[in-house]
Length: 194
Figure 1 (cartoon, rainbow, N blue to C red):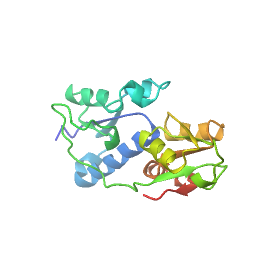
Figure 2: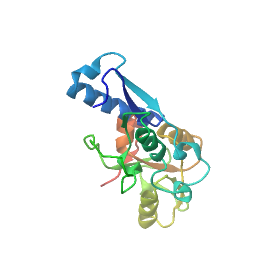
Figure 3: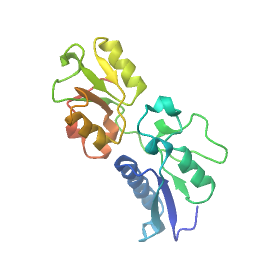
Figure 4: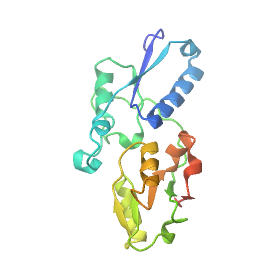
């Protein structure tokens, strides 16, 4: 392990990334009590391509690695000692020198429907707009309701919730895991079947 006087954890700066990094720090402190000393663990926020390019859908700017490449580069360069990622953001094949050393216990894998206009997808009017960043979720919506319109939605969880409240869409779909880790599960109108 790195020098325990200062152990640098690289992560993105979104509230969800910071919450997940906090969970990792708690697990590290529980496993290695010396890391619980004040000032031993330091969070290093690293801006990634996915954080910088907000005006285009993720698939249009490169897909996987958009939220992890710069963090992995910092790890390989020795600027951080550990990287925290959401597994969904990682490349299928890890870059040379990168090791998947640990994975937090899996949070609830279901998605949620959030809307002030309907209790679920079935309640949306024909032509209603559902926004989500996930291509998988977009395909699932159109499979269930081909009469709806889907549009991409970028930003962190709080930004997406604000965009919904501001009328950018009739509903949004998000991961329940992210809402739980941010103590925002109460925002869900309905939890979708897995």
